[in-house]
Amino acid sequence: MFRHIIGAALLLALPASAVAQAPVQVTLAVDTARPGAPISRYIYGHFAEHLGRGIYEGIWVGEDSTIPNIRGYRSDVVNALKKIHVPVVRWPGGCFADLYDWRDGIGPRAQRPTRINVHWGGVTDDNRFGTHEFMDFAELIGADAYVSGNVGSLSPYAMNQWVEYITSDEQASLAQERRRNGRDKPWTLKFFGIGNETWGCGGNMRPEYAADINARYSTFVNAPKAMGMVKVASGSTGNTTWDHKAFTEAMMKFGGKMDALSFHYYAMPTGRARGPATGFSEEKWADELELALRMESLIAETKQVMDKYDPQKKVALYVDEWGSWYDPEPGSTPGFLYQQNTLRDVHVAALTLNIFHRHTDRVKMANIAQMINVLQAIILTDKEKMILTPTYHVFAMYQPFMEAVPYPARVTGPQYSFGGHSMAMVDVSAARGKDGKLYLALLNNDPHRSARVATGLTGRARGLILTGPAMDSHNSFDRPDAVKPMPFAAGNGGTLTMDLPSKALVVVAVE
Ligand code: AHR
Figure 1 (cartoon, protein in one colour):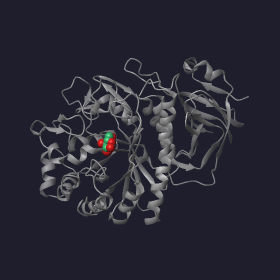
Figure 2 (cartoon, rainbow, N blue to C red):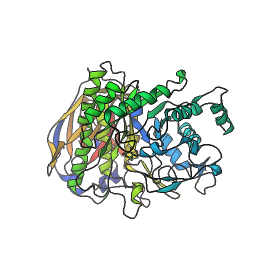
Figure 3 (cartoon, helix red, strand yellow):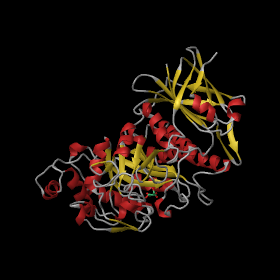
Figure 4 (tube, rainbow, N blue to C red):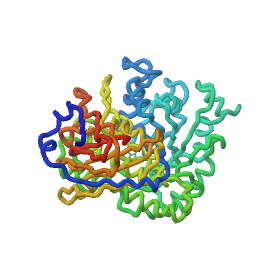
């Protein structure tokens, strides 16, 4: 009755149990009568810090490298990033930002000072990649720039000078200096972060003090008005034991002028082993997915506090660091945070993006940590080789959700439970794309059982499926395409039912 097509290669790759077992019946309900605020394209943003091989090797190899490059930027990486329309990149940190002097990274490269990256491995950074290299990189890939300021160890005066250097078109000294350094026209600086994790590596501040710091710095840091630069206050985190709501409260109450408030959360076990990125148990699969789902309640709690002080929702919430965090790969430098990326990360990414789709009234930006070779990277490199991780493919598959109008959607059916962990077996997001089509993202969290989804819709579903034979299926430099999206189709024009294999993500348009 219903046609169900999965790429032949994929079917061969699936374990017999996933194909043979009777699927679990679940029911989808999409409420098209209650559209939400459009999904900001900035929630598909990225974060690139001077950390490990994120910038150097990952993005920048220099003009003289034997690795093919465009003015020093890896061509393979640039092309891959263009394909997923990266909307924004946050730089230079992270913790790195609060010990970064922007003056170290301008002028002739050979004359720039070498500094020690105390946060990340104690390695030296000769500042080959600085303000010009970052702003040009953002332009090259078509992304907006988000610069994170140093409020921990530099003055408001220094921060304002940095912004003036980047954005001024006047005949004043800083713009002239930029021109002498090779850039005539100002760059557009869309976002500026007033610090990073001021509660921790950004200064270990008390909430009220951090709020005062935001009020002070944001007063003095300004771009030309017409640029509409968004000032992002450094906010709370879901990864500490202290009350993140109290921090949000202090920021909203005493933080002065802010256009957006940041929030960080990593799906990272605390008080127990993080465990390896591959070769993990089902306990670690279930634990990690449950950790990813915590984002929902953390956002809800943060929104509750923000609503109290800003009922008109003028201040946006930016989740400007998120992602999975495991043990570093054996043999890699521990401070470099290099980890493999598997089908488990597909679930972390899709669950998290689906949560952002449910909170579009407030969540207007999110930045996965981090873009290349660090934590939940979308790209890994090894000298001249490059691979796209399963997480990259999630970003590729979710393209139709950029600026789409989300609908409340729910799947009813059994839970996926393991050990002390329990969650909905199937997670969903539904939205009307800019092309007018209805898009569904359906995620089967169960690593063993397949699901049959009665959608309540009519029509045909066409799109892509991302899955693999094992929970830790991943791409390697030897097998770069082990996990990649394959064609998926269901339905014959009548009532639409879709079969989801175990541990699979499906994104389809319903027509
Ligand atoms: O992404 C790695 C680090 O995690 C960042 O530098 C910091 O902001 C966060 O604690």
